[in-house]
Image (cartoon, rainbow, N blue to C red; front, side, top):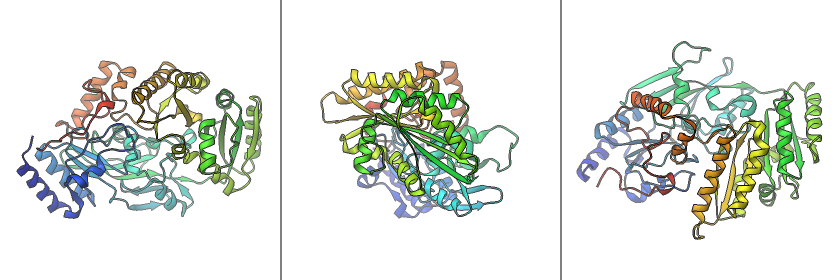
Length: 479
């Protein structure tokens, strides 16, 4: 443990690299950074640095390594797995000042951005050239590209376009030594190891990303959005499974259940029938002449599963309102309970009806209300447990229910996460999916990139030492 004198010396050296106003070390300043959107765990960093350039990031990482201090990179703090919670204290690098769109090349269809660029701002910048950046997580309006890369974020339209990793071409990374390297290439099929693919989804455990080259796509000529309303989740789930089985791959296929529908309508008035058991938002893109026939095929499949309503959005405004209800659905749940726990699991699409029945059974068994809004087309579930944390024993019930849901996903042939990442929330659950040999291989990769183990320690890989739900604030590395 470092002495206060050592701490003061490091803070002084940091202030020589980054303006003193961007080096925070007083308790009342760093407490703001003790947790992300995973509200179950929290721990304070000892010092927070907000660099303004890749050079400053490199120098700060060098200083932290010399001092033997853990380093946690953080964006907007919208992560849902505790990935930016500094469980070992240390130095937190907050990259939100690095928020410039550096280049947009409309002919080659790529953009170069800093990690603090907000996802929706990149979308707006690309739209001026008739292009778009496909990954669009639910937190699109506030989450940053660096965080999206760290957790390999998805979103409603990843059914057709893929997750973040499918759209990252090149990145500049500061290694744990402070050295800056460039990985990948804007060129198609660049030779060598896919180190960009390795860094995407690594949750800040292998390096600090300071610049990202992303793929942009041309906007489609026409878009159609169908609202399909059902009396039961079963009928909606069967519709999803059959649409994919027929060979139709919509651009997006999202499901919202009755619990969420009623909260959304009270808050947003998106146009969902409040007496519905579930609704599907099904979106297709392409040539204007081809879409009517495709919509007929989709409606034909949906019609075999007893829909109470099939309605195509008649205008861009109506379409935007339908999507507003989906994108802001989680926030609307605040009307129903003081707190909610948003989970993230994946199942094969063919298993969707069975797993959704299990989710409902788990809710009944634990006396909980669970709302569901999720990326149905690719089987990425987001069961959202509503609860009052002031009720004695409630947190234990919520945690047990969440674990049972993820177990059901894995037993169905799925996974413990689709886009939120692992962080501290699910690190011990990695043993459900991987053998000891698998996990040892991952640890060797971690050691190769970060031999001192200073980059975001305690994340992603299981260590068996403590549950993510019992983490409390720590004193950090300084007395």
